Each structure stands twice: as structure tokens, then as C-alpha cells.
Image (cartoon, rainbow, N blue to C red; front, top):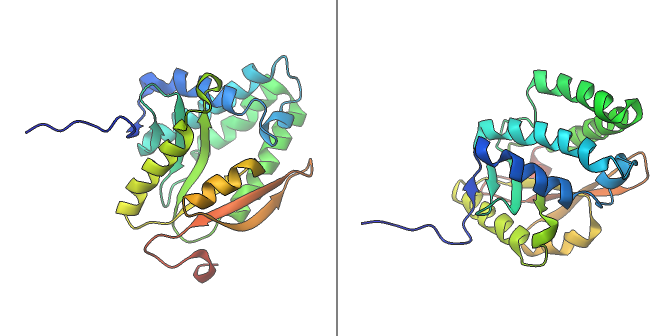
Length: 210
């Protein structure tokens, strides 16, 4: 007996998908209210940001939780419980990469922001959605929320909680409809407010783990 994958089911990305994933993330966050201003040179923003997204995407492959739509028009970068976005070596490389491609100010802004996000994460083990993006050419089709919902189905099957940082206030209601609730706020150097959000699993919530 054979089975077929649902058309809207995510799949784990492979190394062959990285270029497509990077294109998706680069367009998705080009005008993001958090990530756009981090790279103020709009003429070079795509090149500078894509180098960073490539590092994060390639690193995420090791967990098999970089989930994508059929042709990577949408991508969700998940870090499983106990994992980290980058290896220690990659974390060191990030600073060098940003200084080389975007300059010292951009490097400091990204690294400082990363430190603030790391400090805000709950200590309880959880799946961490670090990035969720849809390519500009495919916006408005529901691909991002469908990918997120199907990703959460997998996480629910494991009984685990999920956590994310919403850089765009317009997305809060969408995340709430999928079971996330606002947890805290992180204010970055530009004054932009990022809302951290938690979705319960079978285990106790973060109020029991802090």
C-alpha cells in the first residue's frame, strides 16, 4: 500500500533547497519592521542580509527541522528542544561575516539583538521558530500560515511547546489563531518592540520554568 503526501504538508529542506530558502527569506524580510532597518543600505540590503540568512539556513539543516513548502516558496526555521540557532563556530563566524559584508555598525546591531533574544527565551525545552517567511511572489496565498499550522501539527504529536518572536505586529493575531499567546516584549536599539509568544504543549508552560 502506498501513501501520498498532502499537498500542503511541509517537508524537511535539504542542501539542494538552500538557495531557494535564502531567496525566500531575503525577500520576506526585506521590508520587515525589525530586520529592514538593521541593514539601512537598501541598495545592498539584499546581498548583505542574504549572506546572514544563508548561514542560519545551512546551520538549521543539521536538525532536519528547516521545513519548507513544495518548492520552498515558504520556509520555517525551527530549532528543536535543546538546540541552538548556530554552533559556537558559526556564532563566531556570524560576526566576521557581518563586518565583512555590512560593516561594524550592522554587525553590532545584529549581535546585540541576538543577545537580547537569547536572554528572553524561556528555559523550559521548546521548539523555537526563529524564522518564518514567504517569498514576495507568493504572498497572499496562505502559504506561511499553512506551513506554520502543519509544522505545529508535527510538534503537537511530540507533545512539545513552541516559542517565537514576532517582529511584525500585523502577525500577532495570526499567531494567536494558531494557539500562541503573548509572553513578553523585547525592545531593540531602534525602539522597535518584538513580541515573544508561547504555545503550550503537553508540558507545563514557561511560568513554571522561569
